[in-house]
Length: 425
Image (tube, rainbow, N blue to C red):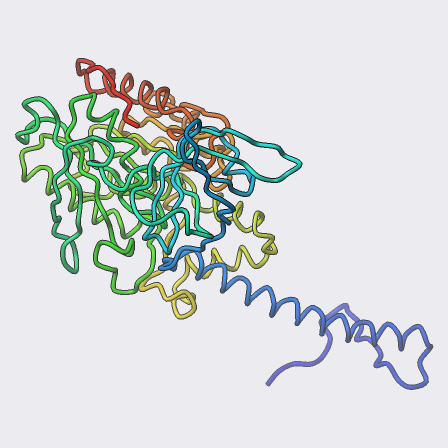
């Protein structure tokens, strides 16, 4: 039986009667409206929290073509150029890709030739059209993945399949130039980020190749190339590391002595988990991480603020991802322990020599946690800060510096003799 008597020492409030003072009647009405409003706000926050959680862990199968292609011009003096809306991405110097026609079209975009802020447009060189008819395209999306394949970037390429849970995951193998190409030596296992594909990793091949490493550019569950996970959801690194382990096993079975893990964005989180959790972690000699997620709680809170998701909804989204009770709403087969992926709190547990390259202007994964990890574990973690680059586009803005930094660090860490670096277009 529920006890409705007031607690000891407290006096039960008098009910509001029709004869109560007017201010009391308005207070009661206001309280009723407040409860209703609070309930509505709570329901809205709950809905946003669920939506936010599902967006975080659900792969996007179709890319949003959110960039208008205003015009394509061709002249004898300037070659082919494209005119695009000026925004935070298209007005940054460097080399990028423009995908169009649902991804079937792909052009490599180079230098800025004209940018007048008051007009709101930017004109850039079209260095190469790999596929599709750019002149007929009207919308597309901007990307840091410059080349469609290692061969297109000028590297020798082999197509291989790596046995993983649920089937085989396609990968590119770029053999080293020297005797290590036969299988011995150190391999670079390269892991792309969330929503990307293995072509993203081609930006790392130049430095690895110059260091004499064979490169293995992998796909992993739910990226559209490798077999999907049973639940069809991202594990944010807590499940994908098993596919990296399979790649390490493939390298070892084909003659590698050890590996260096390269990871971009969520790929960085995956590499950290692989080095920590895998039984093959002892073969990981070093890690090179570009714009890595080293603290998912921080990144998700930042993304909630960026997308104007109320604080309570953002926290609810994290709770749903992290707790068994949220599985029905998120679709996850098992909750994800976000705290276990906070490497700023676990800094002393990072024992693999690690180089982090991270831009101060990263608009997706803030540089703060990377800086904190490097500060807390200075003997193991080295941070190289970039500016102007957006998320994982440090190479795009300054490829020579990126390759020079990575190559010098690999030389020091692995004790290798430096090979001349060649920057490929």
